[in-house]
Length: 63
Image (cartoon, rainbow, N blue to C red; front, side, top):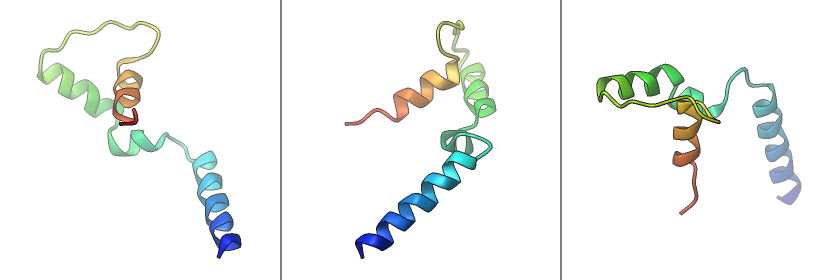
């Protein structure tokens, strides 16, 4: 069983490394983040990170 879970982890890691985009970009694309902010008339400025990266980092914070 342990060998099998290592193989599955390796496969997942390999797929993520070869992915053409970030996983969060598949779930919540940059275009959608920008559209929502525009719809809400939320004003933002480009600082160290792009708005989308900031949203993704906020979403992925642990409890």
